[in-house]
Length: 238
Image (tube, rainbow, N blue to C red; front, side, top):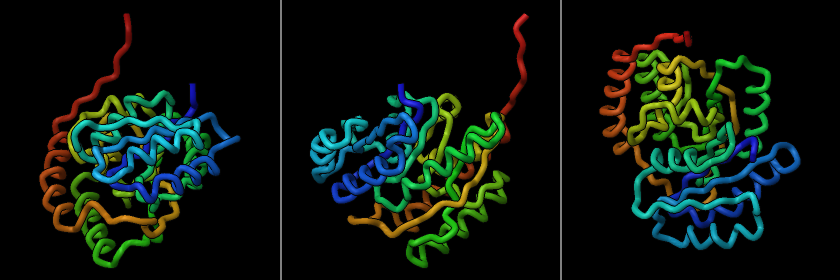
């Protein structure tokens, strides 16, 4: 069984698949037993065919496909459900996350306390457009003030998370943007780790500032409600 599963959701990312797989292999081969789980979210290009052909070059690769487009959070969750590793590294499929940072997150985990179940990437030098950086800065400030999750960057796609802890979280669409707050609600600690960030390799972004904001308002209110309504209790067997 692999120690680590790298989960990568993709939608119309055919030009980024093989370059990213090559970087994952370079970063992890010989260092950790791993698998790579790609989830194709019903791409309209030939991403699925590219993934199928890539299995010859990358024996660590497993491919899951959605029969209907379901979004990034559902893709991540289905990938983690299918994963066999006890810890999960997530990456965006556009190549902006650097797989070379995965060993850095693993090292932070190995040196950290056992009650930290999420190591979240923190893009300290973002390579996005100015408008996207400002929109994220504002959104992060509002989220941090409302949820008090002490996380400077929840939108970064690269994370290291314990599989069992993730699957115990409440599921909803776009939940991947609130993982630190949800993990803390469950009683676990989270740590932010500075990571590299790069321009998109090819293709186009699937999000814009407006659709992020419209969805984010409702989600933020929902997560705040979940936190207010949470109740935890320690248990012991008699």
